[in-house]
Image (tube, chains in turn red, brown):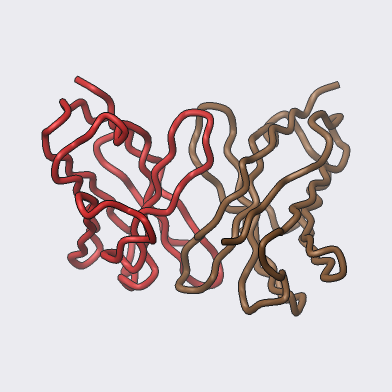
Amino acid sequence: EILLTQSPGTLSLSPGERATLSCRASQSVSSSYLAWYQQKPGQAPRLLIYGASNRATGIPDRFSGSASGTDFSLTISRLEAEDFAVYYCQQYGTSLYTFGQGTKLEIK
Amino acid sequence: QVQLQESGPGLVEPSGTLSLTCSVSGGSISVDNWWSWVRQPPGKGLEWIGEIHHSGRTNYSPSLKSRVTISVDKSKNQFSLKLRSVTAADTAIYYCADSTGGWKLDYWGQGTLVTVSS
């Protein structure tokens, strides 16, 4: 089973700043199988990025994803107040999904 | 856009069976999608439970496989989760979700809290 490790656990930034969240896989993961979700308190997760770098429908272009080997990144170019939330990466392999433990993006 | 809604008891006794249903609206469950269950213990991260295709094919998380059954009822446009021999560790918000393809969970229900307690 592939494990996903997200870092940092908590990221404290101010609106307008750039955020970079990391997700490292324990073994090779196809970029096609890597997604990112945003979850706000009391809400279900929302799909942001799929295939490592493709924005889901309706997701602003300040959100972007990238991949390098077993390392994946989610970047928010210029933080807005609504972006402060918990972010999860997810991979699909051998007929099962696994999630990272999450990164909490909080207002500094 | 498809909408998903979970329903079922909010309280289950230890050693009992947790049963939830996800109703699908705005689309047919018989399209070539996979339908998943995901759970989240209070204050913790996401755990995928398993998925089903309208054909009846299923995939389960290895850690829960011995206790889980996911089924589909095409006539009601619903799919269901049964988790047997529950303990307090199974207390969580349970979400149903839809994958339209591409190994991602596109649409999610609002979630339902299930507490395991006597």
